[in-house]
Image 1 (cartoon, rainbow, N blue to C red):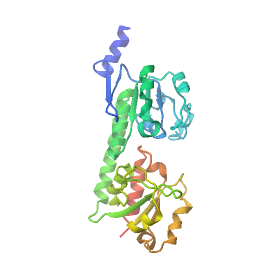
Image 2 (image 1 turned 120 degrees about the vertical axis):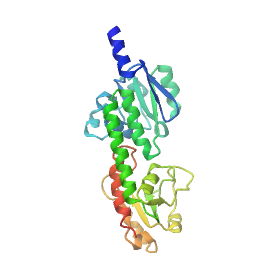
Image 3 (image 1 turned 180 degrees about the vertical axis):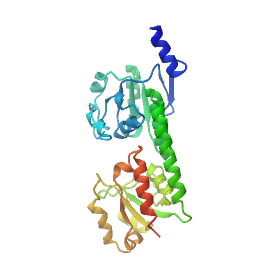
Length: 284
């Protein structure tokens, strides 16, 4: 027992791991987590990026990247997961998505004595920060730090390369029916800024507002970027050709980026950033 305690002290410095989560809570572990449950697909992905994929004992539906994530047992989906299934996995750490899972579940975990790290990445810098924090909680700091630095370096390089004096106005379309976009608080808006663009719906009051066609016509963006459901360009993106007065239509600036590359706050945001920057660079 003494030897085990000394090992923990050596790993953590003071026998305690303390990480501040996105809800402003100090998450404290006596030793690196060995059994982790991730309650959102993007969290699962970030656990692998932090070098702790082998610690995952539970995840939710659509946790499909990397390939190894598909083999992790499911406890439900991010909106409806089973507490009984989760507890049966005997986790020593749960990673919870605040806006997706609901932070109101925290008291349940407190009563059960299960440590919870709350994830709510809203900024590009939060991607690297999340990976660093997971690495600290799982005892995989070296891997996590290397990946975090790679992300930061790549984003900084793209920003330097694609910065422009007159930003391109962009409408990002999540879906067509209902017509939906993102506001300025969303990470996607930061991607636009990185690539020399700005979000025409940055002032919308909610994070992912439903809008109407008239509002898009009124703001007349230089470019329209669509996501959709998977890696295939959505057919509804071409519906905008029915509005030839739009600048984006006249200039052929109807772009597509796979949603997982921009809507999941993970290391794959680098793929989305490169593609978005390349696309916006073609807009005069």
